[in-house]
Image 1 (cartoon, rainbow, N blue to C red):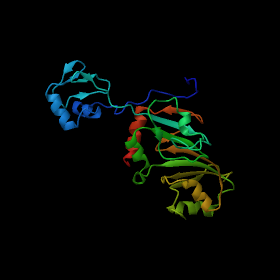
Image 2: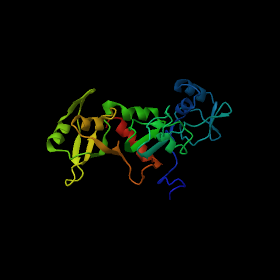
Image 3: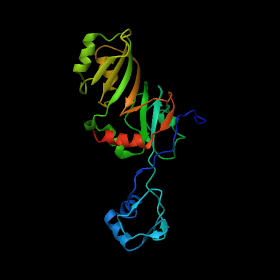
Image 4: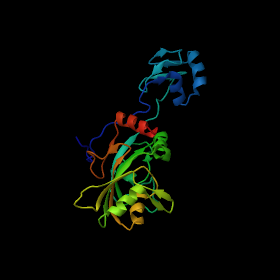
Length: 258
């Protein structure tokens, strides 16, 4: 069921790393020492797991296990949060706006106490799928050009897209910051050629709008419907949900360029 704010579906944030890890790695994640030094501390019998002294650094523990070092309970790996937002128009994709305009973080302010940030950008007048997280490694993977993360947009143009320009977008146009092309292009409705679906992997600023503008079209509405395999299914405009563990695993797969 939806919560009081109407966010649906919603689950608990994903604890990362969700998989079990070696005890010396756990100590390293908890800030005790580097793995090699942590292994020596474990061998000295200074670490307990769930009340039992463990002297084998390779013993695997879960983030939910109780780990005591030198009489002090260690905090498990920090909580990584992954949120999918169906961004509405008129919100800025930034963590803070000096001009006091509404930001996407205003929408997810009650989701977590962790400091999260948007992965990539959607300009103020663009709506759709936006990922927010505090997982810096994943964010970097998903925005690095070499990984060619797929994005699909639904564009509404001010006039029908003619065949010549359709073909040119697939072939490529040269913008002020270099060439750009659509990976896939399709009319959403053959009876209304102002409605166009465009797949692209570039993450350059306002790239879709600039490609159409270069050919003399004005983009009246732009909606990102897919980002790295994530869609806005079951997430109404202006609402959000946490990702599932499977979705996080899939994102990390995407982030490795596979």
